[in-house]
Amino acid sequence: MTLDFLIGAISDFRYLAMFGILFISAMGVPLPEEPLLVASGLSVGWGTSSYGWTCLACLTGILSGDLWVYFLGIRGGKWFLQTRLGSVLFSPARQKKIEHLFEKHGMKTVFLGRFIPAVRFGVFFFAGRHAMPLGKFIGLNALGALVYAPLWIWLSALAGERFAKTAAATRLAERWVGQGSLILIGLVVLVVVGLIWGAGKKKG
Image: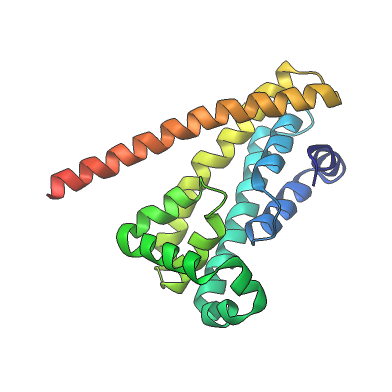
C-alpha cells in the first residue's frame, strides 16, 4: 500500500481505517505499520483528525493484532509452524534464533521487539509459544507501543503542519519523519538498554 492510498483511506474512513489497517498489519500481513502511522499523523497535522482519537485508534489496532499473534502462538503454535505459511515465515534457523532470544533475554525481547519491524511478528508469536503470562505480555507490549505509536504520530503531525497537503510535500514529510523517528527511537532503545544493564549490575 502506498502512502497516498493510506492517506486516501484515512480521508474516507478516518479512525476506522487507522484501526483496521493496523490490526491487519499487526496480524502478520506484510503491510508495514509505519506508513499508516505517518499517514495518520499527517491527517492530524492537516487538521482533519484529532491527535487523541488518532492515538487511541492506532494503539487499539496495533495491540489487538499483537494479541491475535500471541494467542496464535499459544493455541496453534505447533500446528502453525507445520503449515506451509509457517515454514516460510519461520525457517528452522529463524525459529532457533528467536527461541535463543527468549531463553537469553525473556521479557526484554517483547518490549524491544516492538521497535524492530523485521522480528515483531516472530517475537510476539513465540511469546505465546513460550506461554508468557498474558498480563506480562500485554504490559510489556503496551509499554513499547505507547512509546512507539504516539511518537510516530506526533512527528508526522508536526510534518503535516510544516508541509502543505501536496504529493511532493507528502514525500518530504515522510522523509523528515523517518529521520526524526530513527533518532528518537534510537535514544529510547539506548535508555532502555542502559536501565537493563544497570539492573543487571545491581543484581550481580
